[in-house]
Amino acid sequence: MPFTIATWNINSVRLRIGLVEHFLRTHAPDVLCLQETKCPNELFPREAFEALGYGHVAIHGQKGYHGVATISKLPFEDIVRQDFCAIGDARHLSVRLKAGDTPIRIHNLYVPAGGDEPDPDINVKFRHKLDFLEEMRAMRAGGEEGVSAILVGDLNIAPFEEDVWSHKQLLKVVSHTPVETDGLLRVIEEGGWDDLVRRAIPRPQKLYTWWSYRSKDWTAGDRGRRLDHIWASPDLGGKLVSASVLREARSWERPSDHVPVMAAIDL
Image (cartoon, rainbow, N blue to C red; front, side, top):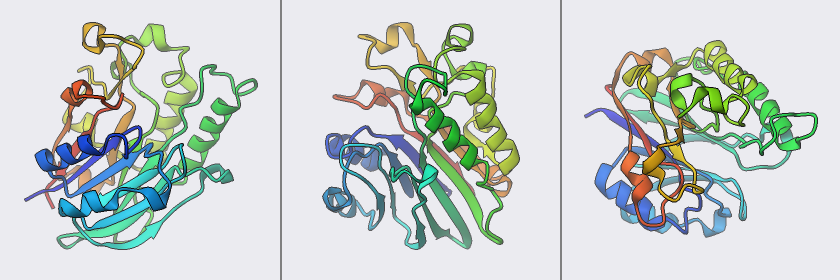
């Protein structure tokens, strides 16, 4: 059986724990990485995951904002929580585990959204996002000798023209401005990462993982963006079996505005 991993910005894990349980029962990935859990560590619903066979839970949370969690069927050998930009936000968590005979470092990231105005001189949130991206340049797919790597999460940037519903109309909208897309592509290139979802579903096919709550009928205009990503070190990229976006999850009851993204790798 291939090793399977999923990433999902859940937009409050306690509010949507029923949706997460349904997803795990239906798709059963080996590892699920959640972002925007909005939950302090002591209130994380760990028991719900353990009841479904996910006995290994790593959390980096805070009250009401941000937060990431990695839930696994496989035991962790190491857990690291990095404070990007040194401001105390819970936006990164990494674990090392072994899938079969393959040691893998899994990074789970929630990149700042960046606010509404794409000008770092007047918008501190956008400045924070650009600074976060700059620090991500140090994340290397081959950062640990003898250890493969996967990087997942809500990176809040749609890097390619085909990752947004309208390239022309979104060029000045945060998440698709050139400074952001160029920055993210630089992180991929310099870090030696392989974009697994675009490997499996190549451009020019349109592909989205997020649709705004502001749209009363998200399916009508289909004005989405691909903000959620799965990257891997080249050794894993070459073993990719499949990658997919669970688009139908956007229509579940009280959904997140993001949907799960999944990948399967033959180890």
